[in-house]
Length: 79
Image 1 (cartoon, helix red, strand yellow):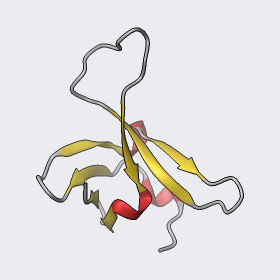
Image 2 (spheres, one colour):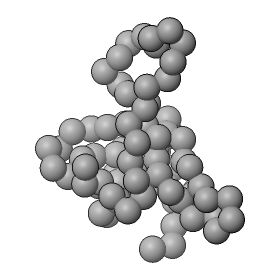
Image 3 (cartoon, helix red, strand yellow):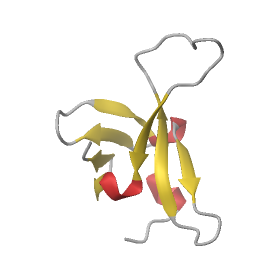
């Protein structure tokens, strides 16, 4: 699947298994393989924590192969 970063925009990330909203792609870090340029995973900030523990960021790691569908408004992942 070939995706341009600009196409991901402000899409919401939804877990297929339970319908949970995980975050918005605009708030997400994208980890890319330096050699191939392929996306390895998405790092979505944990929304349930209102504060950072000891200044530490807590992220949900979503492997790129867990992405099932990229629609107009959302990205469906299977976790």
